[in-house]
Image (cartoon, rainbow over the protein chains, first blue to last red):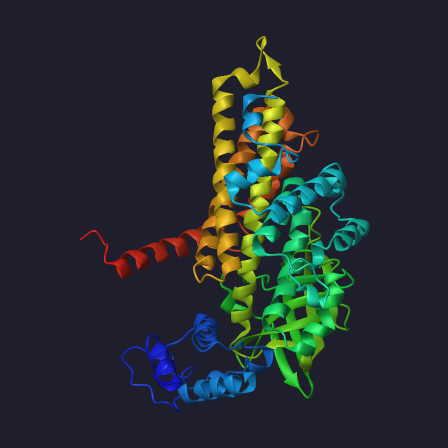
Amino acid sequence: MDNKQKVREFVSRFVKGHDLGDGEDIFATGFVNSMFAMQLVQFVESTFGITVESDDMEIDNFRSIDAIAALVERKQGAAV
Amino acid sequence: MSALDAAVPPADAPAADDRLRTGLGAAQEAARRGFAAWVRREVAPFAGAWDRERRTPRSVVERMAAEGFLGAVVPAGLGGTGMDAVTFGLLNEELGRGCSSIRSLVTVHSMACHALVRWGSHAQKEAWLPRMARGELIGAFGLSEPDVGSDAGAIETTAELDGDAYVLRGQKKWTTYGQIADLLLCFAKTEGKPLALLVDLHAPGVTVTPLDVAGTRASMLAEITFDGVRVPRENRLAGAGFGLAVALSVLELGRYSVACGCVGILRACLDAAAAYAGTRVQGGSLIAEHQLVQAMLAEMATDYRAARLLCLHAGWLRDRGDPQAGREVFHAKHFASVAATRAALAAVQVHGANGLTDAYPVERYLRDSRVMEIIEGSTQIQQVTLGRWAVEEAAASGESGG
């Protein structure tokens, strides 16, 4: 399973009954609350072995499945 | 020494005994003894006076920094002590045994440090953590507001980006050690979503007003007002929507610290009640020989052990990075705080009218224990959360009983 598929699967647990597009704004769907942000950060750290820091904690980095996958790719690339 | 005292080894008992029963490593047990000795010498004899004076002397803060207590959660590479979670728990237990206000200082300061350790950029860590570990900067935690307690997502303080700074407006309340803190881990809303900022409490536009409460009276609580305070952009720990991620991770550390502090209260209640019962004569016999008094001591002694084991277990899980650590911290804090109140009530009862005077420490333990059931998640919030998790766990394992 590629990174984007893993992110898609995680987010779909919260956005139930809605077919979320990869570029769609997760926070604008109305399905997620403030706890979701924390769970999302924990998910990307534990799943992809990256460390999310203060500069990463911008809504633009987590706004969509595409954005999250791009953040993971960027962080994994930077770690190498 | 009563039979009950004999069952609980004194702080200077052979280390091997405690290791066998609690699983503590030799270094952890040695650290605990050091903490206990320091608290006996530097804290316990003065805690009642600090409570009455409603202040913590600056010299005590300086001595805590010199001991490395203020850098407990800061890595050694950044000037801290870099304690493992179990050792940090033991520090909180021993401090809590002597003075819950002093323990609260370690709690909130460590929460601010932890936010930087966990979420800070390299530059942010370098800028603040070494000075915080040395006690040159005291950190505090700013989430609660006059109208916002358990519902953290409802904070009303705002931070509006203006050029290279956020402009902060609003009010924080019940800020522990807010009267002496230099740096506040502050949560505010920007674009309607929570963010996390580190705020210099000496900046123009900050007003700190002392608050007086019935418990942890030396913890120098404050109400802090922000009237257009400019906070540099580089002081931001988390952007819009991610402030609560920082708050919740930091609160877990705070909850663990409070839970361990409650174990200290339990032990202090047990020690005080057992000692009093062993000297107080009524009807020609020591009240320790009265079975109804023994029943109270038995409950205290059992609660103390149970709370301590829950805390140690949570600490071990934190050290292992186990994802279940958060849940176990909730259990430990819930049990330990409720048990501390129970023990403090019983300790006062054992002392009779004497227990209601400040000639004995148990009335302070009772006032302090009430605080523990309110902070870092009230008892009722803990119950709701733990109850929900229990239901979810049963559903996930297919053991709904149907």
